[in-house]
Image (cartoon, rainbow, N blue to C red; front, side, top):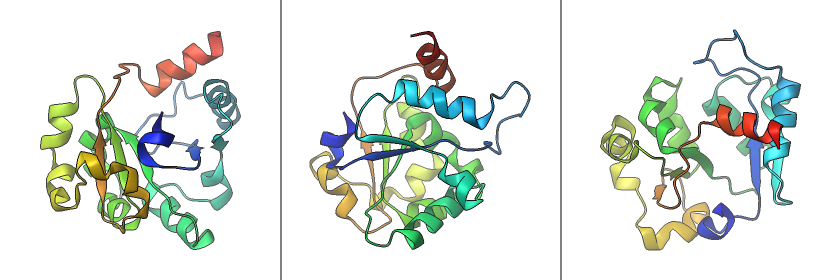
Length: 167
């Protein structure tokens, strides 16, 4: 689990009110997506949150900046899949994400090469932690990031939510 690999105390699963890169058609309500995430995140150290809705932020860079301002003693690490590392240059102020908090990128099937050869990995290549440094990622000043190899789950977040609803 990510806790041991990254030396984290807990994970905050941020459910976004609306991903700016996804269409609203067919999108479940925020409440439904929170409930779905809670069904999947059945671990006492995973806290599902609608903090973006509370903060009134729409973009990850703004959310992270607000969280760091609100919780200055907390060491945050942004967790994402390799599929997101591939397309993160499409995100608003994406470089600021890497400059605000350390980032842990989890391997996903069919994305490893694209992710590690992509624009974000190249832009922040000098800030990448070695495998033996991953446990200290939360203690490193940004920019710092790590690629976490492990068990690959090919399911998208949408598929995981749908599976959780069926269980």
